[in-house]
Amino acid sequence: MHDRFLQTLLNIADVRLVASYTDAGLGFDANTIDVFLPDMHLLSDARRQLYQYGTNYADTLLVDVVGALIQLRTDAGQEGKTVNVFHIGDYLDLWRECLLPALNPGVPDQIKASHQKLTSLLEDDALNTGFLLGNHDFDLYQFADYDTWERRLFIPDGAPRILVMHGDYFDWIERALPEEIRDIGVYYFGESHEAGDALIGQMRDLTYRCNHPDYAQFIQLQQPAVLGPLQANDEGPPANYNLQVTGTAPAAGVQFLEKACEECVNVNQESGSKLRMVIIGHTHHARIATMNMPDGTPFALVDIGAWIENCTEAAGADPIPNAQITAISENQVRIYQLGPK
Amino acid sequence: MKAETMKIWRIVRTVVLLAPLAGCSHHVLAPINILPVPPQDAQWEGAAPDHIHLPLTAEGRAKLEEGLYYGLNPANKGRAAIEPDAKTAYKKLFDLLSSDATLADLSKPAFQGIFQGDRVDQVIDAREKERYKSPGPVAFRGAASGGRYWWIFYRDGNDHLTAVMPVRLQEFTKLVEKEK
Image 1 (tube, chains in turn yellow, green):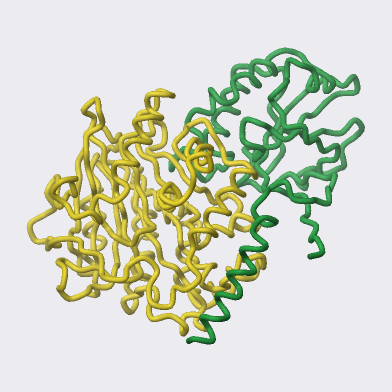
Image 2 (image 1 turned 180 degrees about the vertical axis):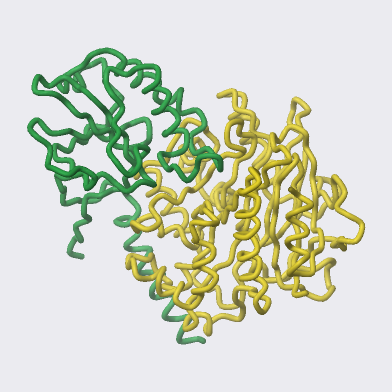
């Protein structure tokens, strides 16, 4: 399915590889591909005027990508193959839309009215997108249309090895007391826990505490995220490419890696789970960071980037609008950077 | 932009003041004593009532475990697990429901810790063609899910539990705004 997915992208976009990673223990066969869409931070047209940056539509590319995913999923489904699509948070930017906790259920529609084509495709039943809540759209949980959107999930179905979350949890760890985080961490990494109202309230408090009052110039990236060399497609993606490792990678490349690994090690020991990868968005910095768990099991933190703000191949090089998409199939993860064809 | 920034800071100060009210789940609520069965993406039965019979059989137990595994959202089937170890989280409840029980039994020590104490005596299910004949179903908020799931129990005229349906609901009681 990787080849098929890549060809789908090549039909509509310039495609370059940001990173790839292979782990035989991920539990993905060749008949299934999971596709991940990152932060978009959609705003109404009126609010968009107040900011220096916006969603990187890249002309029609973002819409074309989602449209192509629907077609791929439909065609693959007829052949007995599976395409799962996830958006892992900060889809709508309620925080920048309102500058207050969003108590009005009309706010999401207010934003979507300025992105009708994109949002109608992303929320189409034919795509069956699994949505997670981020920190900028956390307040969606209280509205009836969104109250089944999750904060985290486990894949693949049947034998989970990967935790998928937005990633703002790791900001909370840095800014909050351990006691405030403990129950939240148990929920995120524990396979036998749900988030009830009290926990949702705690997460909401931390979200508000960590969100800034002024995002006029940037959200996450004051400077473009340095991704490293992007590989052109003509050679075919290698099994492993551009992996960030502590000791050789810059600090931004391995941010949150050790904490994510530690959390998985702890929960695996306590409950017998077999987590070996965490997928996040939130930072707007696409990368794959790796290390080994104490027992030698490989662990990876996959950060799927964004469709807002910018990246670059090297510090000081020309900025490139973030436009990343990530896919897992056949036990391999690939992050692609897209551009107009 | 400076005026905008000033406005933002005033708003932030207001948010900070309101945060203790907004963030705590134990805010003052006006209770509503009716539980509406939610749509299909928050219960496992689907478009028509298809309750799990009690006492719980192996088949019924497997259905419940599957539903909870997927967070009671059928769209997750084949896509992702929400509570991969639901089998462990709800073992005690399922073991208890495998024996004959009455509604009164749900308040006894054996069921201690299973429910959070919230109980709703009126359940509305838009899928049903008629209102329930007395005695109607009763809903209890579950503890294992942190209160996110409610368990609706159906009973016969002798108060014996005949069926169960878990549903997933956000806090549905209405927030009462306090005078500042």
